[in-house]
Every structure is written in structure tokens, then in C-alpha cells.
Length: 407
Image (cartoon, rainbow, N blue to C red; front, side, top):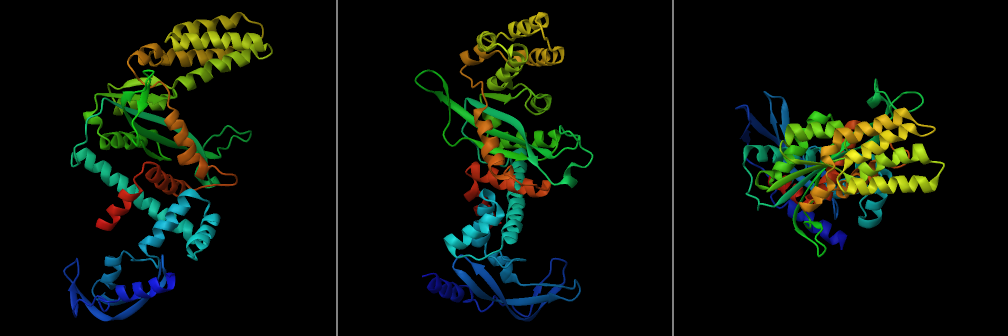
């Protein structure tokens, strides 16, 4: 069936006789392209290889030529059809390139090398990023289709380390014994909406409302990125905007600069990790005391009383084996973020207090593909795969390819 389809496809793409457009066609610089000859191109399609006949034109003044048919068929500079490139990039977004080319052969009889899967994945990833940027610019200009207002929009931000090649960490300090950084932080943001509650009165995330955006880049650049994504999703028509993060200063800087007036919440589960650091440091040898102390802090935090947690941490200074450095650090964390820890009040307002969606996103969007054993990325390569995975996980894969087809 593939063989029959391939022959029919070859007849179809060549039915125009090579897309001859006359002896000359205009150049963008007011020159003329002259017809030189017909040239064949071997093209790998999802049905197999076909020969495409194309009229070739040459501009003697610009000293460059092209085949108009290549542009029409979206095969300029490549020997793969858009359908094959789509398959290669999706495989590359999910699987290591060395396994991806085997999958293509096993499932679709498409024979390409692992290096070609990598190259095409990076290329299409760059195009996916350009698609996101174009939409973001449209949202800034107001040239977007009006979006139905939602009561609550959440913006969650986090970061996770991605292993990179040595040249990408030159001059960067790391946590290892040698002081050399081995990772770069990929910043990931997700936007979702909430309109209702479950039977117990707990907030419920709207189905299929989560979209992701991310890259290895500075906090300032990423802040603009996530702000534009929120605008695209209709932030200006949302009744309330809530930003959730783990307490890192760079996240709240973005909140203050890009989401002024939004409700800021420290992810409850991250906050709990910080009092557990104290519990382990001060009561690590006494499990009963450890769990009792941590349970009391849990109740205080759930009640939205971080001041009581801070007092309890400060009282630990009278305990034997007191670790001043850890206690001061964690007390400072709660002090800086106490207004973002009024969890009882947030719950009364029907808000989420945890960023489980983003935690899962860091694992699925970044971790599952870019943090496998033995992997080391360039920043450019990692960002292209992150762009592909954000596109797929945001259920925007079809939108991207429709945009390419219409361009």
C-alpha cells in the first residue's frame, strides 16, 4: 500500500509539469530570475521516496537561484517532506535521538539517521519557538481573538537544572567539590485557569487549560516570556491573577515587575520542606521529637501563621547541637515570605496553594527528556527541545503546524 501511495503521490506532485512560470519571474530586489532548466529532487515522504520535478530560476545580478516549487511545497533546503519532518521532530521531542530513528524505521519504514533526527528536531524546535514569539507579539499588540473571561488565572514559575556541555558553564560556579557548574537552569512557567470547585469546596483546575513556556535564559528575559504567555491566555480579562512559586527571589522579582497586583503565594509543599530542614538538623536523632515538632509547624503553617513557625525556629537556638547557620537561613526564608504564606486566608478565597501542576511540568516537560543518564546539551539544543515539548504538552501541536502551512 505504501508503494502504491508513493507512486500516486509522485504523479500528483509532478502533475504541474515542474511549476514552470515563464522565461522570467521578478526578484524581490527588482531584478529578474531567468528560467535555466528543470531539476529533479529526491524527497523522502511518509509514503517513501519520490522524485519531484522543479523549474529552476537564476538571478544573474544577485548570483542566486531557487525553485518556486520548493517554496510552495515547503521543502526549501531539505530533502524531507513536512510530514516526515513533523514525525522526526515529535520523535525527537519524546525520545533520545539514537532511539528515535529506530522508532521511525520500525513504525513507519522511514530510514533516517539519528543525527538527522537531531538536526530536524532542533530546526523545528526553533520554528516552534518563533511561533510562540509571534503569538506573544500579537497578544502585546492586541491583535488576538477575544478570550472568554475567567474568574481566576494562575501563573506558576519554577526552575530545574539541565546537564550541559562544559563550554556552556565556563566561568559559572557550581555546587560540586571542584566548584565547576555542570548544569544550567531551565526556567519553566505554566498558566492555567480555575472557574469551579469540587464537592468538598476545593478549587478545580479547568480541563485542558494548562499551557507551558520555558527556556534556559536569564530571569529578566524569562519574565517577559511568561508575561506574554499569560497575556495570550487572556490575563487582561481574568477576574484575579495568582502567582505561585517556591520562594526564590527571582520569581517574586518577576511577579512584582510583570504581574503587579497579582496575589503571590509560596507553594505550600516547598514551604513545608523548609521547616523539615530544621526538624532534621535539630531532632534528627530523635524521631518522635522530629515528627512532633514538624507536625506542630505543619498546623501553624496550614493556619497561615508563619510568625509562629519563625518563633519555633528561633527557640531551637537553645537546643544542644544548635546549627545557627541552618536556623538563621530558614527563619529568614519564612520572614521574607510570610505574607505569601497566609494559607488559611487563601483557602477561604478558594485559591490553590500548591504548584503541583508545575512540579509535574518540570518532570514531564524538562526532566523526562533532557535529564536522562549521560545527556549533555548545548543551551541552543536544549531550548529547541523545550520549545517542542512545551508546544506538545500545551496541546498546541496542531496549531503550530497549521500556522506553518498557512505561512
